[in-house]
Amino acid sequence: MTPDETVTAFIQALERMDMDDAMEMLAEDVTYDNVPIGAMQGRDAVRKTLDGMMGATEVDWPVARQAATGNVVMNERIDRFKLESGWLEIPVVGVFEVGDDGLISLWRDYFDLETFKNNRKALG
Image 1 (cartoon, rainbow, N blue to C red):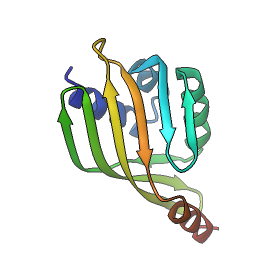
Image 2: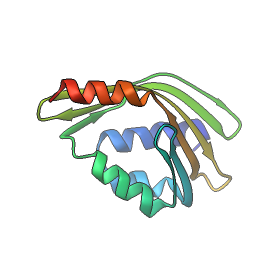
Image 3: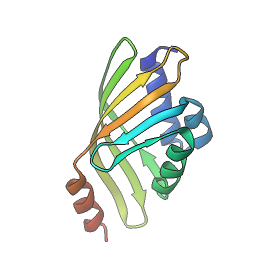
């Protein structure tokens, strides 16, 4: 797969909530950086974080735009999580680097933490 296809497949796995498939697309020493929160290192740390975020009953991350140059892929999307009280939505820009082995070695998400908190608070 191309880096663009890898990132698309990764997002699709997360939307299916197929954590095993998603984790197979990450390098063992991947860096996952939620910019307003902080970075973590390693596939196990990412899985632990995503398992917590995936307390949602459904996940939908529609990508509005995606561009790739070499091994760098950037996308603009809305991350949506269906909770008991409704859909939590947050606009996100993601930056991914895909290694020569075809695995994602860097995943960096930029989003506004206050927007996330306000949207979460509005859902109760």
